[in-house]
Image 1 (spheres, rainbow, N blue to C red):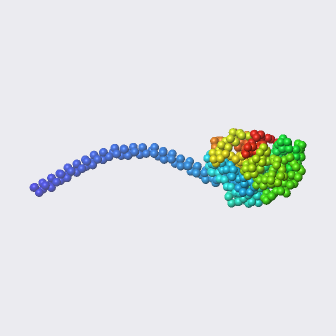
Image 2: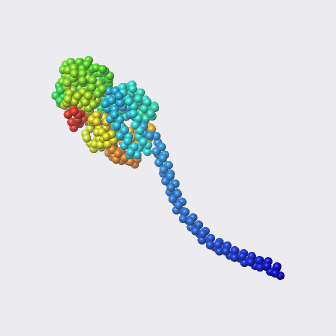
Image 3: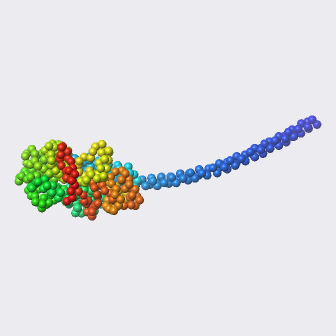
Length: 454
C-alpha cells in the first residue's frame, strides 16, 4: 500500500504542477497580448516614417535632375590677345576684362548650370600667328566663340579663314577698321567697338579745332591704319584742311627715319600717329631727337600711358587724341569698381577694356538664351536678341547679371547695355557709339569729358 501510495502522490503532484504551469503559461500569453498591440501601434507609428522616406526620394529625384542640368559641357570662350608684339601694352588689361566677366557669370550661377571658361592664346599682333592661334582655339581647345583679336589686321584674316568658314562666333572688342563692316564673314563677326568711319571724322574735326591747317600721318600698313588714315584725310580736307602725306609703315622696323623724312618734308602743322605703341614709341623718339617734328595728334592705338612714360611725359603735355569710348554711366562705374576690387588696381586708361568685358558677357547671355554651350550658330542667332531693344535693361555687375540670367530663364526679353555703352548690333554686326577726346596732362592720360558722334 505504501509503495502504491507514493506513486499516487507523485501523480497528484505532477497534475498540480501541470495545472500550475499551464496557468502560468496562460497568464503569460495573456500578458503578451498588450505587447502585440504595442507592436501594432509601433507599425502604425512607422507610417509617417514611410512618408518622410517618400519625401526624401522626391528630393533625390530633384538632385538627379540638377546634376543632369549641370552635366552640360562648360561654355568655353577663346580669347585672342596680344601678350607680345606691338600691342602687348594692352594685353594684360584685356585679359583681366575677360576674366572678370567670366568670374561674375560663374558667381551668378553659370550658363545653363555650367561654368564659363576663358582660354587665351597670343596672336603676337601678327596675322599668321593669329590665324594659327584661332585654329588651335577651335580645333584643339574646342571653344564655341572667340573674343578678339585686338588688331583689325589680325581679326580680318581670322574671320575669312577660320571663324567664318567654321561657323564660330567671333566678337572683336578693339578692331575698328571700316573694312570689317562689309567683310564677307557669314555673319559670324561682330564687334563691341565703333568703326573708324566714326573716329576718323572726329579726329579730323579735332585737328581743325586745335588750329592745325596742315597735317601728315604715319600709319601702320594694315586695315586699321589705312582705314583710319583715309577717313581722317577725307574729312580733314572736306572741312578745309590739307593733308601733305599719308605714310605707311610696317609692324616691325628698327627705324622709321625714312618715313619721318617723307611725312615732315613740307613742314605740316601736326603729325598724326596712327598705329600701335610698339612702333610709335620708336618713331616718336626719332621725331623728337632728329628734329623732324614736335607736334602730335594721337588715336586709340597710341593711347598708351606706358609709351608716354617711356618717352617722357613733358614732350607730349597738352596733346590730344581720340578713341572709342562712352560717358561715365552707372554701368561703367560698376565695371570700374568691380575691376578695381578684383585686381587691386584701378582700370588702366587704355582703350577697349570695357569692350572686352562686354564681349564675354554678351556671348554668355546669348548662350543662356540659346539653351546651349556648344552650338555657336544658335548662340550667334541669339546675340541680337539679348543685346538689342526691346527688353529690360541689364548691365555689368553681379547683381545685374544675376537678374539678366533669371529673366532669360523666365522667357523674358533683356537689353544688355554694357560698360562700353549700348551694344545694339546692326545687320553687319556693328554698334554705334561715341568717340572720346582725351589728352596728356600732368603726366597722365586723361579724358576731356567730351564724347562725340561723327
